[in-house]
Image (cartoon, rainbow, N blue to C red):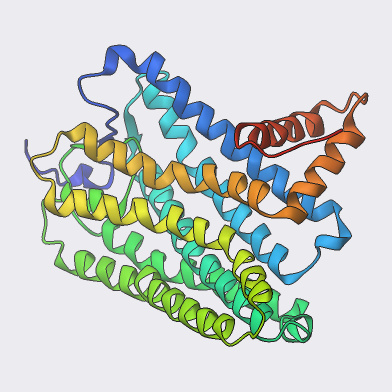
Length: 339
């Protein structure tokens, strides 16, 4: 395939679903879009509960709102191309649209990593200085942290998009996934791309690499603080406040590490395995986080049940749908619910 010149500004990209299973896309799409629907509904439920309950207007829940917004953005960013590939077998995407999707996928991924770090800091302050937590993490401080998180993600990813736009591509380029990722776009170039590759590595190190190290340090400090508490009951209680966050961290980093390992060492693996791991990386955290926090966080669970009971007998379909979904989560995970 020849490299194009005057048409180089308008290369075409073809997304890839699960190779060899195209005839079963209709069946495969059901669990995928169940996950999408659950992710969107679950995160909107979390935002709705925190927004409408004054008792939840605390640092921990403000950070949880940031996490829910990030997961919601990630789901909405990948949804259009997943729909087009699995429902309509429409694989083509323009270069600019691909760059936009890639930009926001990586922005939301970096943002989620930073929000998880901020939540670890919140847990450390809450355990070490329980009486001064509200004084330390004021509304102004939380807003500043949120702006810093968003600003870092937006600034880090923008040059990557600019560098990709300067490269040359074939007229038609086949991507490995049903969405656009930086490392996948680099593989399709026909010009030297070492600058883009090095910058991509720098972005990973300065974002998720740094965040993971600081997360580990935060939990070492949390563990040291917990062990210094004299009462065993208080130690257990302090650790219990971290369980939901630990689950969220594992849900985010485990698929990411798995995808990196598959890309590096799984060259002989089926292309469908690569696609599956990429889907797990982008779909599982937005799906699991609202479930984990609805099930494991008593304050959230109680408020959801309270709202559910208030909605019984009313005809507000919008709110009832999300609250019924949350109630289903609890029944699935064997949470005792009484009315």
